[in-house]
Image (cartoon, rainbow, N blue to C red):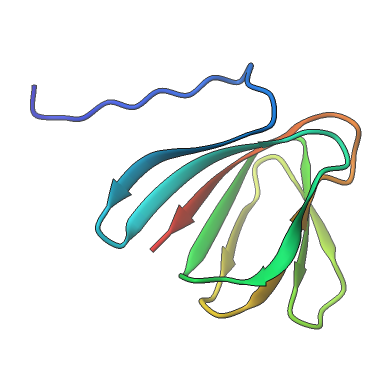
Length: 99
């Protein structure tokens, strides 16, 4: 088999699972329970966030927070102060790509 296959589940609770790490490329599967937030931190790479389910509130730099629904793809430059949170009671699920 030439390809490498990874799987993920939509039924997970509160997880951050590294799915792929290949040099500078990383793919994480993240499930945020209701009202959960990650502390603000500067990004350590160019970050792409794909919202799979729910809504994600993103606060970047000194901008006002913006809420993104499932289907949005957000690209955050390296070194940007960022805070991510789930503004709702329902789970939010995202893929986070770092490169």
